[in-house]
Amino acid sequence: MSGVTLYATIAFAVIYLCIFIFQNARPYIALAGAAFFVAVGTLGVFPEFSYTPLEALGEIDWNVLMMIAGTMGTVSLFIDSGMPVLMSDMLLSKVTTVKSMVIVMSLFAGIISAFVDNVATVLMIAPVALAVCTKLKISPVPVIISISLSSNLQGAATLVGDTTSILLSKAANLDFMDFFVVDGKPGMFWVTEAGAVVSVLIMLFMFRKYNQKIEEKDKAVVEDKFPALLLVLTVLTLIIASFIPYKENAAPGQLYKPEITNGLICITYFVIGIVRRMALDRNTGALKKALMELDYYTLLLLTGLFIIIGAITRAGIIDYIGECIAKLSGNGSRASVFFVYSVIVWMSVAVSAFIDNIPYTATMLPVVAVVARSLSAAGTAVPPNLLYFGLLVGATLGGNITPIGASANIAGTGILRKAGFEVKPAEFMKFGIPFTFGAVSAGWILLWLIWM
Image (cartoon, rainbow, N blue to C red; front, side, top):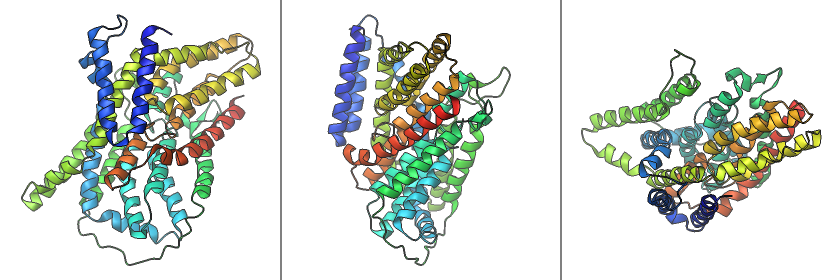
């Protein structure tokens, strides 16, 4: 490990420890940590580490930030319309206990998240869950945590469900249908659904005491349904846009979409909604209220984390992890293959609990290809998809362990914080750890049985 990698690792550990300890100051700690790395990279403290302010800005995922801001704005109009209360009334009329309500809402979020970005899914479903919990006078914390976890899980189900899936499709030359069946074998969709089945069993256990009966009451009346229409159009447009490739995945001459497409979609519908609201009210009160409703805490925290992850990637931390795994190729025996495969899965879980899975996955994909060739050359034919899918299972689900391991979790806890509920890491991990290990274990075992 080089000097800059060692120092970056120490700094990264200190920053994340502070983020865990000082919850109310998380955005400021993240931004301070980002500023620290930029200062070190700009001043040339380490000749091999350069990280200018312009490069740091380039590491920020503006698409995610725009999507969160736009969806939050539309959701604020959606909440003001009273539609979440009506939807909660409709949901409560279909279930009999709080436990069944939690499972239904989590599965619903998972289904949407297989085709729409995880963060957008949480921002759309969480307000409904919040309204349900308010009506039932129960804590929304475990409910919204479960929704966030389920949303993040299903992102690996299809090619369009998560950025990591898109990266994998390019590296492994997979198309949309290959996530269902590839080389005559079940694809990632079925592996993910196996994890979802296990997660339902875990939720049944975790919420075993939530047997409060739900009584059907008169449904709320909603006069303005336009914000609900905007949310539906947001979802449909995001799904349609997901079938248009990004530039790096497009064939020569094929239409491709800009990197900030999803963000532009969400912002556009918010602007439509707020302009209509101001026209009806004949004042700017709705705009001021919507801007006040934006979760700047979450937006600033994500901004800082994006810059920090970019810094440690440049410092070689992720490359160092990849090189260590590649050295475990062994003698090519079946046991050696299983060991390396298991290391890839569970190392990805551990790393993705704290590091954004997008740069990690992008770095590990070429490493996985090298490992597969090395193992095959040593005597045992290793299907590359075994290691590719193993990487996706670990990297995508690993973020469910901690409240800052995935953008969906940050969005979910941000909604809870705005509603007056501070979620401590230990409280989140009480749900995140069993959920993650159950779902990952199911995928880990099933992938091995399918491919080896």
